[in-house]
Amino acid sequence: MPAYAAPATAAGGVTAEKRGSLPGGGSYVLFEPARWNGTLLVWNPGYGGSGAAAASAGPSAAVNEWLLGKGYAIAGTTSSTGGWAVKDLIANQPDVLAVVRAELGEPEEVIAWGSSMGGLTSAAIMEAHPDSFDAALPLCGSVAGSLPMLNGNLDGSFVLKMLLAPGDERLELVNVQNEAARQAAFRAVLEEAQSTPEGRARIALAASVAQIPTWTQSSQPEPSARDFAAQQEQLHAAFMFGVISPRQPLEARAGGNFSWNTGVDYAQSLVHSGNATLVRALYSDAGLSLADDLGVLASAERITADPDAVAYMQANATPTGDIDGPVLTLHETGDTAPTVAQAGTYSERVRSNGGNGLLRQAFVDRPGHCDYADAEIAALVTALQQRLEEGSWASLAHPASLNALADRIAAEDGLDRGGSFTHYKPNSMLRPEREVGQ
Image (cartoon, rainbow, N blue to C red; front, side):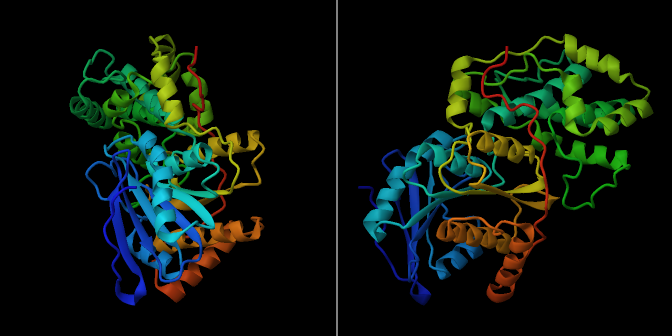
């Protein structure tokens, strides 16, 4: 059994954390409440939250304290390596549960949760370990998977390069050899293009096919529907984070290139992006021919993927949506990494597997990535716990119910309230493929 620190008693009668290593090389942390309600939450970190980082049991100290006060046991795990550690985190789960059973006994309910990459991991855990996990709470997760997310990134970077710097070899699209140089080169091309009307129009096209939203900066108000200049500025501000994400370390894990754009019609991608009016207006203002640029993209040489690398990323992870227990996801409508369209595609997959009654999706209408208030998260945990106890969602995940619950938690327990849950129907991803396109 993995070694862990000896128990200690903290103020208020709550057992202090126990930490130790796992057989797979990762680490874990476990907190025991003074009076356990029988539910265990297992936290999975986002990208970069493993390696030398200490394991965390939740998204914030305030939420962790609130959970313990409500009787939840909380645990978390890391991988021994950083980066795209989805495979290792999924493999850690049985060992983390073994520690919990040895320390606390058998949980009545086990919930997988996490943020960003950890949100994807928690959705994938529901499929990888259906006998061990009863529910999942993915926060800001790429729940439709790594492949459609990174194919979307390829689309955006491909369009930008083909229209602005097709001969610049520093702009590596796949099979990346120098990530730092690639990032710097894309940033330089992006900033130069932003200084001209022609460049701004082409940035908007590239960002749109990558499904970047038109309100991405929390420090600025949402642009009005016809303020195309402000919308373009939002697309530009989010482009590097939302589209030019690190690729080299993921390709190293997968053993090759896992992205492709064979068969992609970028004219149709623009139509379905929701930003066609914006892009056409910017092209018109710049005196550019959108048809000509789309023709350039149509004739450009396409990129194929390594099937073995695709298979790795499918497994680590591109969820199928085949779930046996309740899943409650949370997304900001203005998230860019991943985009909120991940929620739409995941919902389609769950529905195709007959699990529509198990899934609920919550949204807060603002920009940001995993920038949730503590009371918002506490409300979701409470709603999911009620779903497990009652066996039906009823109105538990309705925006009005979640808002009322978050208001009460903020008032009674002092957690930060944040904004409001809202009705929202996300688009599906433009690139939802699970197999290599031909």
